[in-house]
Length: 129
Image (cartoon, rainbow, N blue to C red):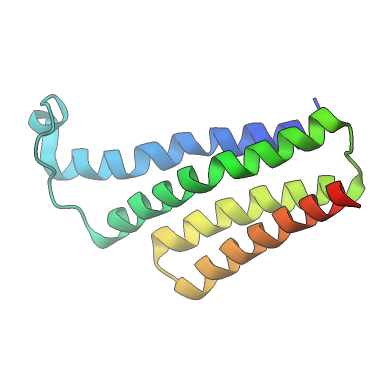
C-alpha cells in the first residue's frame, strides 16, 4: 500500500477515537441508564469533552476533502516524495489538532489546523504543476 493510501486510511481510522471520546464522557456522566436509553436528553459533560465533540465535528467536516485529495493523487499516479511528506504531515497535524483542541490550547490547535491546511495546499500544488 502506498504512503498516500496509508495516510487516507489513517485519517479515516482517526475517526474511531474521536467518535468514542465524547461518548465515553457522556457515559461517565449519565451512567448505564443513559447509555442504554434512547438518549433523548444528553447529560452535561466537562469542558474538555465538549471540546472533544467540536474536534470530532471538525474532523468529520474536513475528512471528505482530505481523503478525496489523497485519492486523486493515488488514482492519478502523481505521487512523489513531496506529496508523500505532505500527506504524512497532514495526518500528523490533524491528530495534533484534535489533541490540542481537547486539552484546550487554542494556539496549538490553530497551529495544527494551519499545518494540515498547508500540507493539503502542498499536495494540491504538486498535483497542478
